[in-house]
Amino acid sequence: MLKREQISKNLTSQEKEVVAKLFSFRQEHVFEYWNTLHKPEKTQLLQDLSRIDFSFFKLIKTKKKQKHHFSPINVISPPKTHQEKIDAQKAYLTGEDLLKKGKVALFMVAGGQGTRLGYPGPKGCISVTPVQQKSLFQVFAEKIKALEQKYSISIPWYIMTSPQNHIATELFFKKHHFFGLQNVHFLQQGIFPSLSSEGKLLLKDKNHLLLNPDGHGGALALMQRILPELHQQKKEFIFYFQVDDVLTNIADPLFLGYHALANADMSTKAVEKTDPEEKVGILGMIDKKQGVIEYFDLAEQQKKMKDKNGKLKYRAGNIAVHLFSIPFLQKIKKASLPFHLAKKKETIFKKNTFVQEEVFKYERFIFDTLPYAKKTITLMVDREKEFAPLKNKEGEKSLITVQEAQNHLFATWLEAKGISIPRDAQGKVLCSLEISPLYALTQEDFIKRFIQKSLALKKGDAWYVSEKEK
View 1 (cartoon, rainbow, N blue to C red):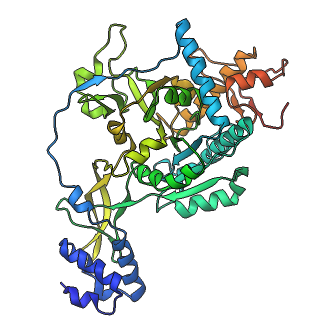
View 2: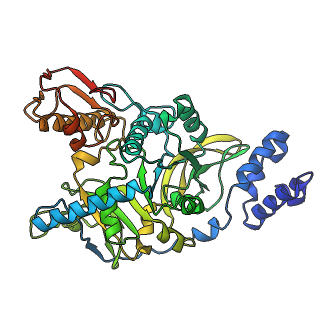
View 3: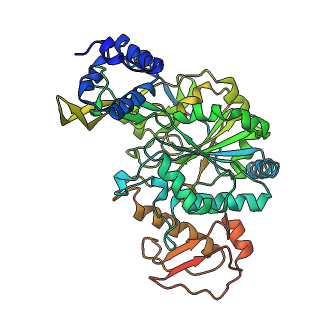
């Protein structure tokens, strides 16, 4: 093995510092092939190494798994009583007022690749709509543009990318002229190194480290980085969402209003879990603090427990939609989110060849910010209206189910207007439907605008209404 002085020869002072850190943390094995590398390859390896925050090695020290006390969380459900309807109306009007005053910024997590879905690029570029085949990015852009037009504002949209898809994402937006938006910003999330079971850095090839994005928890650091500009723009809230759910109700006034009226620090949307085996995190109390209970942390008995109304006791399924109050983010600037460990088979470079080995990947999750919040609200929303994530190539949460969810949503809008929709015995829509967000953001908007009383849809039809339609 080469000595530190041999590697540091002819390097800059900064590069020498990186080499010194590697030796001090006993990770010098990454220089095993140093003498076989050309100068550009050496520079690349040093660049990878320089991106590591070496405090990472101190922070990831394994802690013994503790037993926690779980209890259900109180949620705001769709209003039923007269008073609940009054409260909901007040919240909605409050949220609309905040939107009109331009108090909201948007933050979307879009670091994922479409690899699992068989798509060679950023997940947000995947075509998902039933008729026009619009990409996830385009759907969200149109929703944001519709909000800007509705409330006569400009909404800053921050998009968190990863090192793997940052350039491709920017190029996609440039190719499509940012879908007519003027206030789009890209932020690249951080990285963590993958480690062996012995805690050693791993090589992807001779001159590249095996690195992985730091998880959606990396959004916290990026949101805090943009706080000065948001403060300058007099923003008060950040609406956080993820790229894979085409039905996301972006910056909806009801959620915003409930959050603001409660003077909440961080709030979350949930959908009702009805299947005990559904693999979704549950919003609940963990040792008397709000958080997300991972589905595998609930005992089998807890998963199936029912409340007095016969519903699952632990049923507030997390859909990764949050609201953050900016003063709260300023208060917790030094907060450190815990690490979550995943084991995964990866191809690594070892003993001068490529081999498959199980590696340790570390990431942080944004929902671990919840325990820092003194005041939170959880809004239970309709799964059929707001939750259809694209996760898998086939089966559950696949492109087929995502398009079916859109068909069903738009069918309910049309049926509310008195239009007959062909369905099978199970209620599945038998035609393809799509309504541009620029035509109508909500069912209420659609009912006000749509005037075609003679519309007749048959099985197999493909029907689309754009912003240009009257």
